[in-house]
Amino acid sequence: ADDGIIHPYDIPRKLISVREKTPNITGLQDDQLNKLINLPINENTDKWDARNIFLFALYEGGIRIGDIIQLRWRNIVGDRLIYTMTKNGKQVNVLLVKDAKKILKLYKTPDIRPNHYIFPYLNNDADYAKFLDYEDRKTMPKELSKKYFDIINSKEAGIGRRLREIRGLAGIPHLTFHTARHTFAMRAKEANVDNTTLKNIMQHSSLATTETYVRKLDCRSEDAAMKVMYLD
Image 1 (cartoon, rainbow, N blue to C red):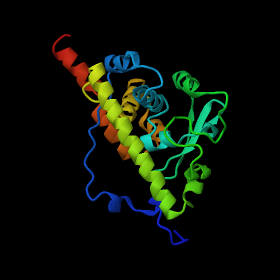
Image 2: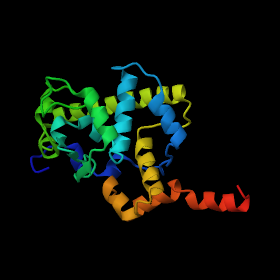
Image 3: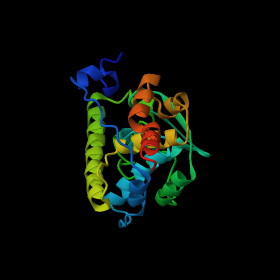
């Protein structure tokens, strides 16, 4: 940065990860998603919060975990969710669907303010909370920026642990936060959403990335062939 401070935004991804593994792209089938939604979980617990933000991410186009932790009520504008992705600085502007609104209602309290975080992972009164958006956070002092992203990383790890617990309770073979993103892509293809539209919703850097998702998630042609072959 021009101020001589190195921020997480300034670090090339190649310096963060020497080797990137090909992601295991697996979405939830309808029966698995229903198990997750209907699993009895005590309200206002860590597992309850983890399921809520997983489902919110799924309903709203596959929001990444780091972004959903940082969402504030000011990101809700009418019937839309508008925020800037930490990964690439792109603005996302997506319709708030009915199921997502139901989740938001669970966290609305009489004392909420526009600058308050929506989900209970970050402290509204902390020093880092004064930096309201993507551009503001780029000006954080180095030590505060490190503390902030360490907290987010810690929260992400905790959510991952809760999802693993939920996976066992629900009898779902695979459940990480990124599963929400994959499930959204899979359901979009089942609804015949074209790849370009899907790319724009998920904010992929290239159409090739979207096409990779589609190839690994959309098995309808293969399924149809198997049914014809075996007269199923």
